[in-house]
Length: 259
Image (cartoon, rainbow, N blue to C red; front, top):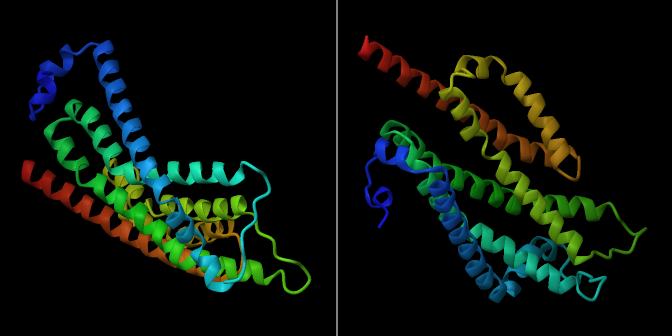
């Protein structure tokens, strides 16, 4: 058994004894495990592909119950099922992938660094999930209603399944990434690259930037959708400012205690 993996405490001598090829070998093993997790859970996603399609098309069916999505190529439905199964496998395996990444990196960190990083990992995952759910339940239905409503009676609505699924998944992915803002700002605050005072003083600039990002990300471009997307981001921004302030306060206490 590898003594480094068997020992929970950080051993700098053991870490230094590992050669480049040993690190590379461990990385290969962990990447293989990640691929296995994704493949296994993608098979589960394939089994439930019908349910996943129903979930993705539910916002559309809520407004246009009689509309059926169209396939334009013989292989399009098959390739779509593969893609959905793969995405679901990656999403379901993400906690295990984070654990593998943590297992590879953590032995090189000190106890203090590990105590700082460990609480961040579940927060990253939860914020991403919150962003995806917010987009799915709030922004996607509004976007579908407005965009398809623009067609009016002048056009026949024919939606391809590939374009629709890409539309929904793209919005959800953008929302998940945008909701990681508190983690990014907290890390920058810990590295003393930003301050709580600076974030607060520049909040007016943040409002403009977030409105521009919302206009770019949201497909409709109407004021209602932009506001629905921008408001939670503003709340996250001010929550991030509070987190940075708490980090600064803790650092000041440590300086006073050590002095």
